[in-house]
Each structure stands twice: as structure tokens, then as C-alpha cells.
Image (cartoon, rainbow, N blue to C red; front, side, top):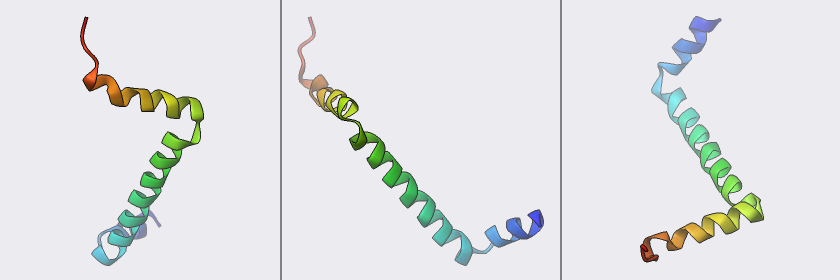
Length: 56
């Protein structure tokens, strides 16, 4: 059973769509994480001005 799964991954016609779906799910997860919570959203938005702040 496990050998069949590993054999399935060795064929490029199987791994390319799998990688595409995996990366798409990861991308959507990051977008949902960043924009889901308003408190986190405000905190992340405040970070965009860090390069322009003067050092004391």
C-alpha cells in the first residue's frame, strides 16, 4: 500500500497537479490568515511604515 503511494509520486503527471493544489491551498491559507482578524490586520498594516520611521 505504501509502496503504491510512493510509486504514484514518481510519475510527473501525478505530482504536478498535486503540487499545484498544495501550493494553491497554502496561498489561500496565508491570505485568509492575514486578512481574517481585524486586530492582526491593523498590526500588520502598521508594519508597512517601519522603513520610513526615524531612529532616535
